[in-house]
Image (cartoon, rainbow over all chains, first blue to last red):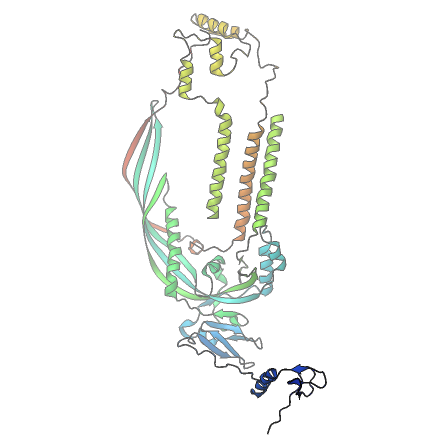
Length: 359
Length: 188
């Protein structure tokens, strides 16, 4: 049978019932307690004893098809598990740092035709960012001073290269204007012409970004690459860098390549129409001869930084060192420059005009 | 969009400057109707008083020291006789050559106009300069053409036809009738 002892909540001494007071009283500290209070204490003591530190470890179940885009790889150096998406082709082990290439990603028809190896290293990318910020008068000073790069990644980005001969037939309306006078009247003669130009123009390796993870505009800003330095693809070039295989197919990239080829063809043929006062394009018909696409990996350094809660991504061409990335604008600095320049130039013009008046 | 705003602002600025300048120059311009009204003050015989002439030209016509009445009579009377060379020589004998060693009265400096124009030029220069600075902050641009990838010398122009279709001729009368008639001469 369990023994129950009432202890004084104040001093821990054993309580006794004081019949005169009809209360429990501590003989040590003279504290008095109502019986109703001790009933509550009894209930608390009767409650189950011990810690209750339970965890819900059931977690959420993977939905159907949710794991389809994931791949698990095991590092051959340390045995660590690396989880990546299905387009991950090269990375480094997060546990031991060893470079890893997923060989299966470049087998069969997925094998790139060419690769332009990295010519510039991570230090060059850091230096590039510093140079990129130089001379930018509207850049917030605090961005430059406190700027720390969150991440620098050397990535081989998949590109589709489109080569074709554009066969074009262009139609224009042109006008030639001649004016003369006979003393009483001025005459304007407008001659109208129908103009046709036809021919071919060759294009070589127009690049289109084959990775959906990369911002297309950012990648196009890094152009051009010097293709003469491209070599046949070998997986050894990927060691130490990240690499993705394409997840945008050549068929999906055709539209973008066609847009660029069409615009350039129209511009080049329009330049052959000369001797007119005005030329209006009417219609263009462009077909492609010997059109083919090849697959290449181009080197890109990506730098991420965060400022004021906003993420800024910069990119550097890993071959030529061309650096791009939009910078934040300090609106205060903008207005200081605007008003300062307006005041200085205005005052100078005023002073000069007054000086000229005096002379 | 920003470039468009810049261009519009610059345009507004130029227009305001043009207005400011034209407002200054406005006093010198005479419309055709005003001119006709002024010329109507000339008598039927072609005579006009000195006061009327001063009113038309906006200043004392005789302020340069020449006696135009004498010059006119001399010129037209003797010109009929074909003695133009002598006339020209005689004309210069009348009065004093007014711009020799003479100090023309300097117009007062228009501070208001100068400030407006200076401020306008300052704002325009500042706008252009800050627009250039802003454009340097944006380096990410999509490529719209494949010019860098066209093979040099690969343009093969096979078809080249320029067919004349028609022509139109517009005729406009030259503004000869708009020229004001030559005045017959002052004081007659």
